[in-house]
Image 1 (cartoon, rainbow, N blue to C red):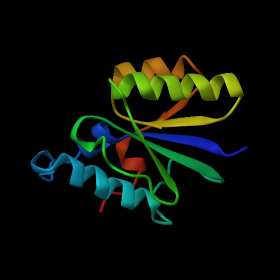
Image 2: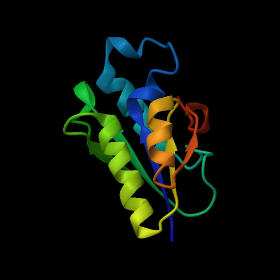
Image 3: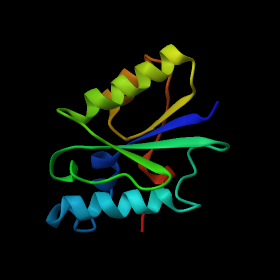
Image 4: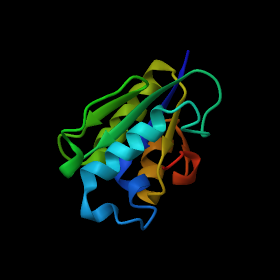
Length: 123
């Protein structure tokens, strides 16, 4: 069974002060494309299914081969916690990429592991 890698796009994009706030959708698009690259993440070894959770201005972003973009209908944290809970119910390994302490607590309660924003490659 492949590992579910859930990326908190807003948190990862916001972890580097590179001007992302000027165009949040473009910043999320750059992250998505970096994740889709062969060396786009180091948080998980072996087969992985990548889900990047977006919210706000990034919601219209489309999926690409290798990265499913999940537009949160409300809070991105709630969507990420639900994905981790679902993986836990299915017995599927799950790693959540975020530096958000509150979210880390929520997802580890469902059996997910966490990795920091530096575990994914940024262009």
